[in-house]
Amino acid sequence: PSSRRRSPVRAIGVLPLMLGSTFAAFLSLENRGRQTVIASLVYIAANVALNYLLIRRLHMEAFGLALASSLGMWVFLVVQVRAFVSGSSQLRLSVRGLSWSECGEILRIGLPGAASNVYQTARGLIVNRLIEAYVGSVGISAFAASDSLLRILLLVPAGLRGVWLLWI
Image (tube, rainbow, N blue to C red):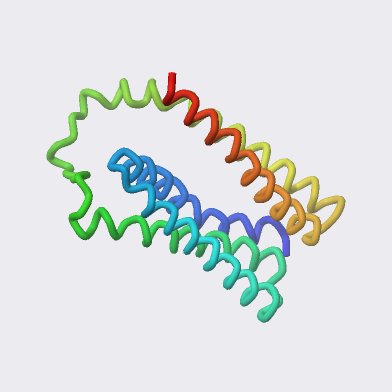
């Protein structure tokens, strides 16, 4: 399957990825990191199960890989949202409580992070196109697996850095 078919499926997982990482930060502020760990473990289990079902059983190849990751992110989000829907969280969202005059400042602060995400996305699209052109869907699957492993390995020094910064 071409990347034109995979890209919309991967885009399904963008919203839960953004919201899930934001909710994880709020849960961390409330010393409820356990909820995020549970959501991550459920995501891993769901992703493995969906990969097995969609790739191995239904033979959907790279399309199944993209769909499994996207659906797994929705599972991750649902597990985290439970804390905010049940009322056990201190976070309360209200449209009436928004201060529209602060939107400019919020955009100014968030622009560097957003620009970094745009760069990462563009890089990912370029790398995926190159891999698809020269290797095929098997190469994209291998790249996704190695990329996930490297991201996990990067979390250890990033986490240690975060702890070190808290001690300063």
